[in-house]
Amino acid sequence: MTIIHPIPFPVAARNPPPAGHFAFRCNACGQCCNTPPLLTLDELLRFETRFIGVLALRRIRPLRGDFTAADLAAQADIDHSLLLPAPDGDALQITLQAVDYPSLQRCPARDDAGLCGLHADHKPLACEVVPLDALRADRLQHAVLASRQGELGDADCIAPGQRDGHAPLTDATDVVDPAYLDALYAHRNALATDKAHWGRPLYATLAAELHAPAVWTRIPHHGFFNLSPVPLVAMMAARSPQMAGRWQQFIDAQLTLIDTAVTDALVHKHPADRPLTQQLRGYADAYRALRPSLARASRTPHHA
Image 1 (cartoon, rainbow, N blue to C red):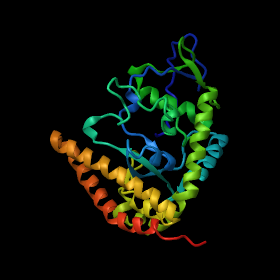
Image 2 (image 1 turned 60 degrees about the vertical axis):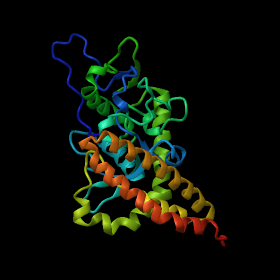
Image 3 (image 1 turned 135 degrees about the vertical axis):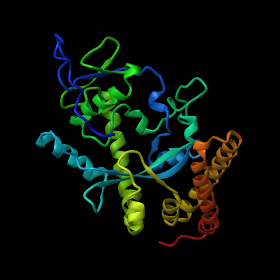
Image 4 (image 1 turned 180 degrees about the vertical axis):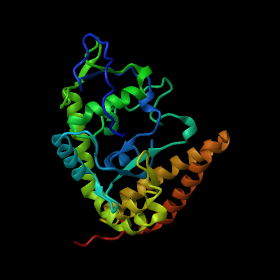
């Protein structure tokens, strides 16, 4: 999400809200749930029978503009903790993402009533922080809300200042809702753990391929460039026979989901879905090629 300055209040307003103060109320309208979520590694495994997971890459420009030194320092700390350096001065986010067919325009976890089917079942941390953004410093969350207020204006969920039925969420420099503050830090901790556990070593393995112009120029600043999770699965499975067995289970669950999704897509024949069908078939082929080596590794005694 690109940070922009808060929307200016009308000059004619008699009592304009203090700058940076926003309140929030979820109306369960579903506008925040029209795409599959980002996932941590633990969530990828936990929801292996619900979400088709992919590696997701995004380039992030350094924070620039009319920001204070404190703003820039706080954001630099977040970038250092959660992102990876890139050769052109940008930072790189390597994360995991659920995918589904674009014609569906919804998260696969939404039920028939349009509500989150995971709301009471440890829904992804990325969903817990909505409408905030864990990749932005606390003191910049008001700018995130200003941006999203414009995107979700008809939902009437984000309000500048105070509003009846809305809970205060940010002031000029802080997130003031304790539950959201806890969710932000939980998500950042999980992202930092993923970066150390698999993000940094996987990036080192793929760096030459990713930095090739044909690939690097396709990694966007808005949205994500998706890759097969097979390099991640192979790296994690190589750590022990137990891990090989666990990731073999993951592959089996993903193959079932992919086969079902592709079959349904072939029935509906929506033109916008064709590219993803090709991608999913490629992911399935790669999984099937990797699976025998994982089966062998899971039966191999591990020696320290």
